[in-house]
Image (cartoon, rainbow, N blue to C red; front, top):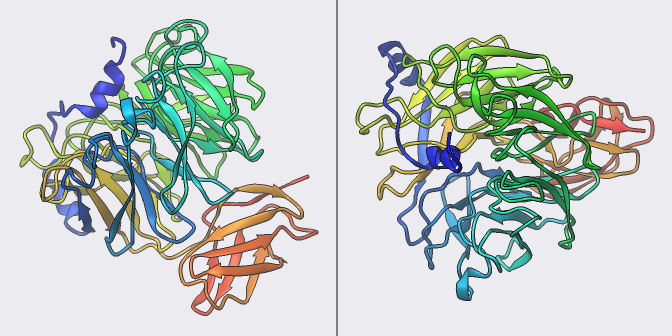
Length: 467
């Protein structure tokens, strides 16, 4: 693939596969609701995953559209009420950024942080902070040896800093970088890729239970087909896997599962050169779980998410309904052993080409976006209900005794108990969707449980108590 081919692939509908009749039968049993259709004036072409904020609403970005056609930051309620928080290119020469392709993350201070792919002082992208009320501050403008064109969401590490990637530039050529940035805006480049150790990191980083960061490059490596890497918070990088077409090509993101393995997606490669699902240990042992083909979609574009039932859920940017010229895209489920179940085929009126990852809301349902389709063909926000129950999510998945942890959930007002793996904790109910709790003395790693008037809600993953 040529430079930028991998990202242009995401944004261009070039798919020509369809689900089989069996997939259509299964998809009809699912309940998908279009919550909101963009119309251009309030944004168009949402490409990033949503996040669920402390207030229970969902937050995201549109790649373009809005008041200045530079993209937007928006919030949407579980009922579909949409609010535009910010219109990019609001400043001369788009000094505040444009094309916010990576989405946002809500940090421990309650503010949202994200990146823009273009705009800023050098027109090579920015890091920004935006308050829940919509006040935006540009923290950094990229360009040159510190990288350019950040394509993915930031992740907040257990140290409180934010970590991310740039798709281009760097100190060793036009191969991209890994960086960290404080909440106040001090940026440090941790690694500049040189092509041999990877190039063009496209997906977001994830912080593993061991404290290291894991990610993928869309190109580069020994076969120039992408890599999986590990990097310490201080910047020591280890290449865990070089893709070779047989096992997949052009990986686009990772998630660490409850079993400790990393699960990921490749856009191409595998038995049918239509993409794969793989798992890889933190030591670098990789297994291909599935090679996509025309019977259930192809060319997946976004990282998986592990749900409370232990299975993984994802999207394909193409395939699905023949009502679209080249396939509208689909949603699927896959187990840790590689059994795949198609869940929904988009039909353009309910959205098309879901390029972002799904998120499981604390009410148990899945939420996501489509790049196009909907009533104005400008993209949608959707809810897919599969009957999974409510749960709570900790804002950080690890911490020391005495640390304050934010717990997010649904219908938390009136909660009477919070425990960390069975040990009672002091807590405060902030709102119907948020509790703050203190990691108690004697706590051990395990699930966080909240006793609410409606019953006990457990966390969707284990909380690790650090020494």
